[in-house]
Image (cartoon, rainbow, N blue to C red; front, side, top):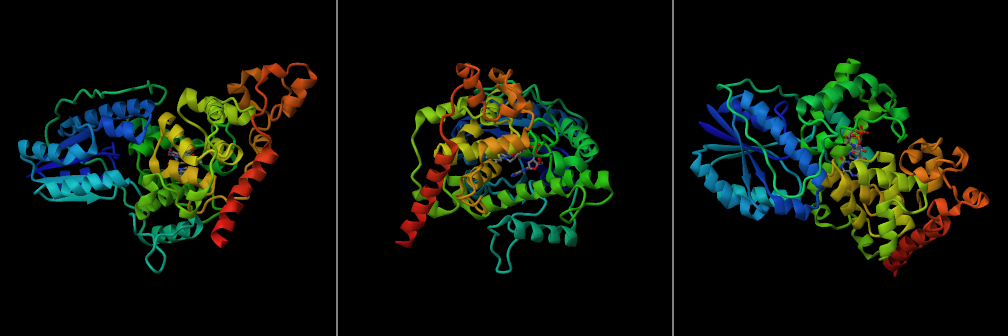
Length: 469
Ligand code: FAD
């Protein structure tokens, strides 16, 4: 039997259910990655992530070659071209069965359905991206939870009851073969600041658990501190699996922390957030279609302030922590979670600009761009999403800065204009700069936060009034 493993967002050998089953059940196994540059552009993912994809594919190809599994790259411009091209490829290579792990976006699911209809060989699809399979964590009436806390309780109960399954790297069945040379067309931006490959991801995971897991709860909100795992680029491409994260926690602590307040639980909780957003994306396809989770919020009257948007993108809002965060994103392609929340709140609640524009800007820059988490995060901040921040709770960019970057350490890494400002004035430096006669050192605040906050609340109130009417 000749089996094909079609790799997508699961670029790893270990804990890969599709690869594992194909190797277990087939005499000969081949691997394929289908690159769709046009689709990549349409989804708006970044050139930085594309380069990271390329390097991780190269590492995967080398790992597969050691197992005797050749990886080929097939290029189709769009998902629409995949069924026909893949059918042809499968006939040419005399494949008996196709193995793949589930992809969750709506375009990916439509593509997969069309592929299954076009092929006349068995297609076996596995869950490789979540600890708990999509659709398995539901309310008593079988619906997807719309609020995180009950979802997480049900998720933890399922984990207690059934545990999780970690698959090893399959054993080589054939002699080693030559790895492919992976070249991807289109815009690529050097991702060399991040080590590629599952070995590097595994090392980063082990290092994080040994050094930061226990302090994560206390440190995770401070952007100047390296207190979070920075594993998101690997999780987004499936170079690392969430089961591997659980195994690393267990390895570090001796057991999994399954209750709030237990040491190490705070990090496990983030893995559950990741699953929440992925389960939501599968259960509510409109999330993949640029639409708000709460459909009534489609009537919000967003601003079309192009200058404001450009200032936000470039880090010129006059709010130091917002500017530092946006400059960091532009320069490195990564941003700390606390800062993602602050800048997303600023765009939507201070500048009143549609969350979709921020979502797209993030996607076009991030190395860890990922539809479920990015859409979930943006809609949470905008107040349009499942379990979103209540609309009247608007982040204050100055007090957030005082709390989470108290000495201005992060600000000073990215906003050198403020290097002479004393720490206690750095969060809102304009009065101090004015008194020194140096107001030209740094851009003035784009908006008055208190007034902008009132306007944001009024926008949502108008929505309620409309509904009642
Ligand atoms: P850690 O704190 O170490 O968490 C471990 C892992 O848990 C992360 O790598 C990630 O996979 C997952 N995770 C953590 N927080 C969240 C969360 N709130 N939602 C979903 N998963 C989470 N994450 C992405 O992976 N891709 C995105 O495109 C993305 N866009 C975001 C946009 C906004 C507006 C917001 C508020 C959040 C976004 N996040 C996104 C979630 C979160 O900010 C990042 O996952 C996190 O900052 C990555 O850093 P880390 O790996 O050090 O995370």
